[in-house]
Length: 235
Ligand code: IPE
Ligand code: IPE
Ligand code: MG
Image 1 (cartoon, rainbow, N blue to C red):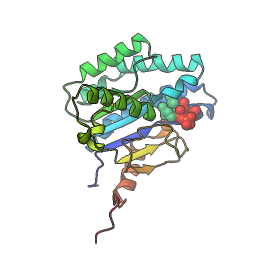
Image 2 (cartoon, rainbow, N blue to C red; image 1 turned 45 degrees about the vertical axis):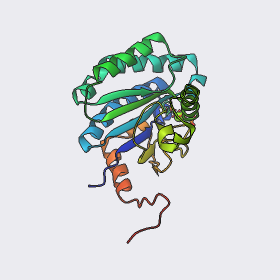
Image 3 (tube, rainbow, N blue to C red; image 1 turned 60 degrees about the vertical axis):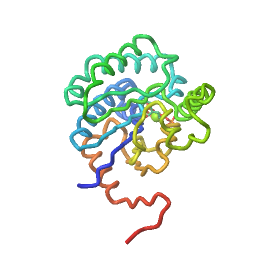
């Protein structure tokens, strides 16, 4: 395989249905999903993918029951604090994108701990979108830009799509390949600015079952795409 995408993004959907179909609790599905993410992060690094962005918790997921939200928050703490050691040892650098407001302080602490622990790692960037919304990101970026305009840090004539992208949560390359598991074909407010020319891939798989071989399939799909970016095919 030679055409490896720089930036792969995954909407990790279907944990709940994966578990329900097996007569298990939704929580069991989230736990299994976390294990899958750990495997994929290591595999992405081995494959030479530069950035792996994953949708772990959306701003809208707070609409779920307190029980489910609490379970997810506790699971994330355990993962960020204890279970991510293998990922960290693999030289993966962990970043978080999203709003900190509304998050419990122990969740924020766990995020800061893993960000600090991996800040000098030079391998694959794992960008975990947590309490994240794509429209919220664009609004937050606009507010920062507005402040810089007001304080004359940036001039109106210097605003373009590239400079605007520096105001997003992270300064990352555009998404090349966007995967959504969970048998749905929608974006659910995920990385709207970053995915403008992403190739879209919708496997018929719930996230806990999206193992290394499934990522290989997605990479194969990507390899065969002809990306024109508005241009016409060159022979
Ligand atoms: C994705 O799986 C994980 C989160 C949103 C946190 P879901 O929990 O949405 O699982 P389904 O879609 O209900 O099966
Ligand atoms: C998207 O899945 C959010 C994450 C995977 C974290 P949802 O399950 O929340 O999305 P909808 O409700 O199906 O659009
Ligand atoms: Mg879902």
